Image (tube, rainbow, N blue to C red):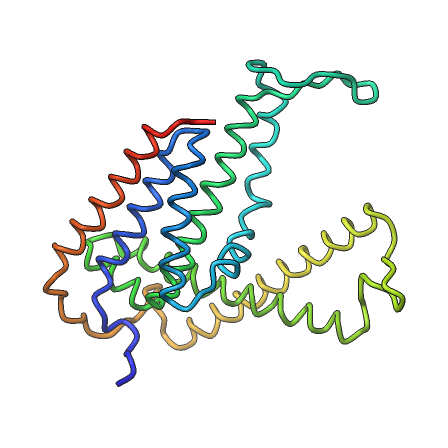
Amino acid sequence: MARVPGQVDARATVIAALAFILAVALMPAGAYVAMAAAWLLVATAGALRGIAPLTLARRGGIVFPFVLAALPLIFIRSDEVIWEGLVGPFSLHVSGVGLRIALSALLKAWISVQASIVLVATADAPTIVVALRRMRLPDAIATSAGLTIRYLELLRDEAQRMLRARAARSVSPVGVGGERVGGSIAWRARTTGNLVGSLFLRAYARAARVEEAALSRGATGSLSTGSLPTADRYLGVKVVAAVTLLLALSAFGQVVPRL
């Protein structure tokens, strides 16, 4: 029998995912061995849900533009300088500590996003919303989480439509003979920026239409999930097992050698 959205008690899954993300976030900078172990756990969980590790890793790459804010640490920190020199009229140096912090932040965010992807693949949005409500979280937080998942799907659909329209107009970065075409790197960056800006505007306009349609149907700002599912009789055992495993992972990150 097919699963009815929102009719599965997913509290143990949500708690395990949140605890895992917290354990990864608390890992010290440079604990790459522990981060690799955490990624193996995520990859295994994803494989059990039918998501190939490489596919999961590629989807997690969406986080890369958002961690660029950590890059200045490489040049701002003045401890453990591993290189310094002149770049044009500027004098720059590379800090080993700053590099370690920036790389660790990137890996943590990358792994955490993959954990979120596995969570969404395990439980749909209504199921997650019901789980958050049963965990006594405020309705505004539970509803915001469900709407975020749904609007990410809208954003993905808009991006796919734009790329499909772009391909239909024979826009290709590779020429007939295999040579690269399309102008300089600056031109490509400007084109990509325009594409991202158009995507944001189109997704925002579509979200506004969805909101208007919801209001016209009497929406009150809270996702409707129907009746509450039957409580999982093994919830306590699952939560204890998940938290114990992730505490062990966090402790492992504290004791393994750091690079």
